[in-house]
Image 1 (cartoon, rainbow, N blue to C red):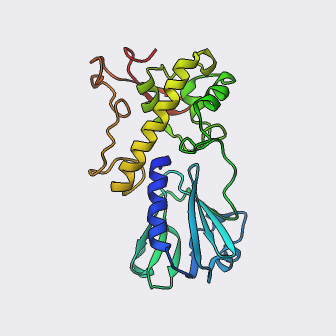
Image 2 (cartoon, one colour):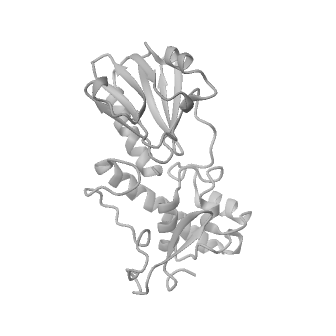
Length: 261
């Protein structure tokens, strides 16, 4: 599933594809992606509009046109990229923009779980790459946190954009067991976790922007090397103990039992 760094990389692709362009036509091929809005209504609202800007809102992509705003959530397998001609689109494309230079921006979604709506993106929690995401604010939120901190970090109403991979990596860097409760951690450990979240996401955005190709994995050219995620049974890069995998909230969590407490 695309996480914050991958969504940021997709935003960069959309900016390049739409910069200075006007959308000549817009087609929705999977009706459910815009439900309960009508496809014809969305198509008419977008066609003929000039591109203004694209922004990331948590894990959502907001496309602003002159007179309309559109938001897209990629969900598990969605991706946005440019092709030369609409006839070349894959059969998994859910929607596409025909541009005034002849190119086409496609919303490709093999599993068909993506979302596309007219209007601004829904409100979310704090963005971890926004200046408002301070250590003090993070500590304040965590003081009221209950349950496992890994699951707590994935709640998009608290922290928008932080996903499974990078939550596991940040907890490892901060030396925190993902099963700990947020309100059980002292301020210095929470501040360390805040710093780890910001550093890891910043590095991952740079890496994904260089080499992102598809959701769900790392491209050969990416420089982000997970320390624990996906490394079950392999030795910890710090202490040498085998990395463990456990399930939290239906998602895989990876940790080092020696380094994380």
